[in-house]
Image 1: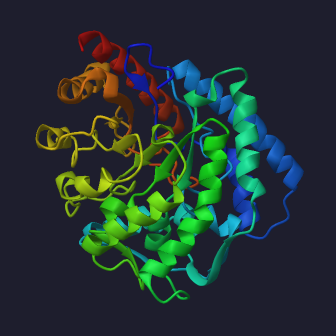
Image 2 (image 1 turned 120 degrees about the horizontal axis):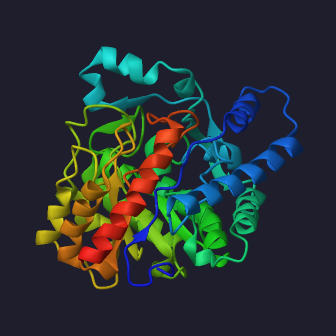
Length: 378
């Protein structure tokens, strides 16, 4: 990573707390109320400038635009792509065991605004300018800084198929192929701008315990290799060192006792043409899974971004805890192939965060402080 200079690089998973007025305006647009689009774009411009500055102040090396222009890391497809309509039903096996918890987590205004729809027609990227607006906004916020020290997120074909059930293509393979072809445009635009491209693909882990009703995903054993093949097709021609592949088990406050172990999916994860794989390592269900790399050889051309900050708890990790998490894995794969991150985004959908915005920034500061300790020790 360009920012490294012999130390552990710090980053995060993309989404950051959105200012209330930005969230209000985007929700208003979703609800069909009249919104001054020029005013909204100008406000997002200033908000991205602010969020980039705050990341730098917190000690984050590889920054993002906070996903401030998007309704969510995956739901932005509703605004940018045709072929999607209606609303699908999402299920999580772990939360299903606790109906009262499910109501507390999901019977909220935020969830009412999270819309996973159905694929009812040919998928086409209809707003090609949206990604370029995001790119120009982030470039402006970066100023003269190297764009290699910034990243932008984009959804994977597998995650769209996971969240948006197919009612049109008739086969999972055909659906993934169509998605791959349309997503390639955004991937190329981001990397051509010099940014790192983060592919968000929670389906790699979540397909084993979650589903959208009527989805063509089916059994995770068959979905994962098909999803990886579709993604690699979309990534053709993009240098792997520009790509980071983010896997998580769902950024919701469930018990996660039915999560699949990382060791069961790591083989497919490593087949993605990405120079960096990004996994959780902070939340209590997966904090031990750095041990996977005791048995699984990390290819020489790959690095690991390890989540060392839990984004579902308001408890701020001590820098020593962060450092210990990094040192354990660093001793296995080497400091030069280790980056420090958060488990997932802080605000993956608008106002979906379980962490207070002020606490989120404290956590990022602790991330940077812990990485500095680990860098010295390794």
